[in-house]
Image (cartoon, rainbow, N blue to C red; front, side, top):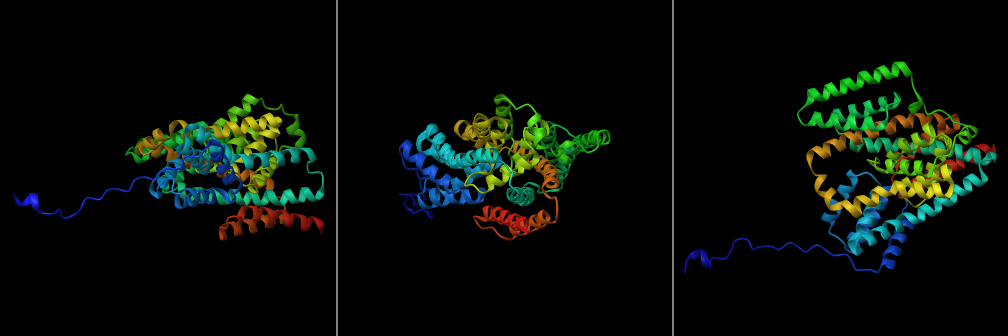
Length: 417
């Protein structure tokens, strides 16, 4: 017998641990489980994702931590609220596509119902009381701080080099020049793709051409409404024709497809449709909707329910909400495996990195206009500064609702004086 037949192997073969399997639950129990998650979805996407991971990965082991991280990486690249997409994914693992649909609906339902009720009360009772006017004025300043923090955080992740910074700045100027965001985002993706794939000269030529066009537009038009975010009074908004349900559906679907980097990035798209072009709500009302969504257990993108309600009542709220969440459902239910493969391709990742940088520029430019509306005096400036300091200083789960409640209290106290 030869020696190699009898010698023991130096390293025994180790079999990889099998991937955990989610429990097989009834459709009703699955829906109620994610309805419960939705009712506890305070604190924004980081807290929501942490809650799902603690319960379904660490405690019940539906998937391994490594697989969870891979899945989360996919949804961080795709547009849409990551926590909601994770719920759809877990539901699909448990009971197929119908399970994914039920899980996603369960997670978003508490926030949707609460936002719908607040939207009705907002329009039904209005802001006729001086106390309410003062409260919402202070809250709008706090929302401005929330948006600034979001821009800084998203930019900190998305703008990893000088090219991405340049793309973001260019996108902001494009917003100022009134360029349609579709052209801006395509140019942003192409410039960055060319720059990182060895074609820096073509990238510089394309970027330079865009700068020349933007310069001409800015000289001819001055600072247009996209950044200036003109004040539209309540009477002016009412005078505009209400949007059709088809218009609301298109606005929601398009916005849902462009929310790269977090729910805050939907702001420039909905603000453009609802305030700048559609005129069915004012910038102040838009900020009020953001404030209301900040106190609810839901993805921030649920403020689309408020925007839809002001545009078309109950039907408008249903249509706009369904449309803006539709991509988040579709990416998971129809294309998760495809996107998990495709999004790791270098060219696609580079193009999407450029698009994300462009979105950062768009939201930064829109924020300038919204701050002009919300910061109207010493009180609102003080609320903005204090809210911004608190948001950067602490990371508590209920920080956003507490900041909004604190701003409301400050507004009420100053009004009482």
